[in-house]
Length: 196
Image 1 (cartoon, one colour):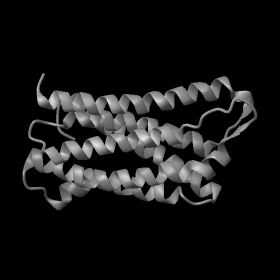
Image 2 (cartoon, rainbow, N blue to C red; image 1 turned 30 degrees about the horizontal axis):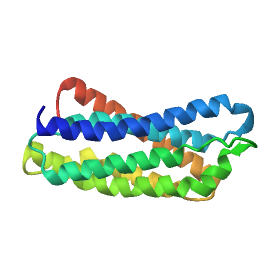
Image 3 (tube, rainbow, N blue to C red; image 1 turned 120 degrees about the vertical axis):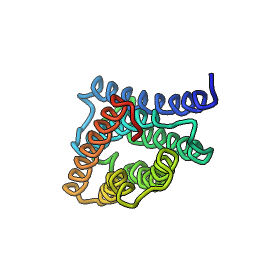
């Protein structure tokens, strides 16, 4: 097993833990549905982060032997941040009483939204570094073409910090669309065997 394969296995392990946490939460919410007050925005945030984990995990496949050690460290920190976001976006069901997801988002939402803002700030140099490893010199147009969704995701999660429920729900829906886009792009590039 090569050093690159070991690094990818470590990163994948962290992604799987985050994915598992959100899936477990969806199952628990379903089982306890009579004691849960659902709100669209929290479910959308959970789904967006779930799909982001899947899409970014596939994006890790573009990690190559040409990638520098700082790229690995950046990807590991990004993975840990995604795990943290997955844990915080997934509320625990109380043993008794009602879980109000709107209250949960108001009280705990900043933790996963700020985490995602920091993750997007980590992703920007990582995307540049991966492009530099794959192509050498990186033209600004190529960098913007690859990274536009990262910039937009940063803005969407920042907008989600508001207390206005309509803006929060709109931001959550936009985050879901961006996550679906990222997953689709990574699926296409993985199928084509090319770098992201």
